[in-house]
Amino acid sequence: MDTASPPLINQQEATTMTSTLRIIKKSTSPKLSPRAQSSLTYHVGYNDKSKSFHLRITANSGGGFFSNEWIALNDILGIIESTRSDKPFKALTFKTLYQSKGSNNHDFLAAALRAESLLLPVEKQLMSHMLGDGKSFKAAMQQLIKDKISLDDNVAEAEKIKEAKRAELIEAMKASAKKKPTSK
Image: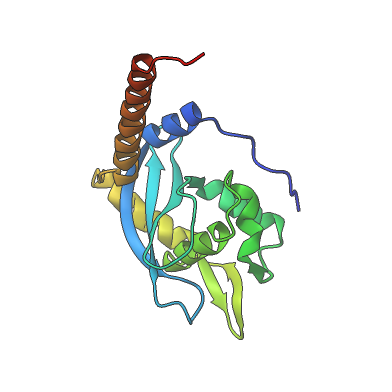
């Protein structure tokens, strides 16, 4: 298996990726652990130009940090196929897909993939997965594309608000620094 990290994505590239993806589905899934009482929210995005699907986790009703990076379905399937898709595997396989190296990213992605039946649980191996039915997923998503579904990107909207607040704070700090006399 190739364990090389994906190329670094700068903020401008990430913004471009977000603006080129159309959100066609928002859904929730349970976490993988049967002890977990919380759920995850995820989005399925579609790039009309490259005809590619992407997934990201957007919320966690319980504890645990995560990255809301978009992950291309082709990259996910490529990693699964490189690990012998006929054998069970752990979610840790997905760790290299993320720029952010949080400890929950790969398990949360696996939970969303299970919710879409792209991964299937392995009997008597709680945290192991097998490749599921990608054709059914793509058929369902094609109907959303055909129906021209385009949902609001609340993650991007929240980021814009945060960025505006940061800019406002920086300007306030600059103005405050100009007003203060310097002591010698």
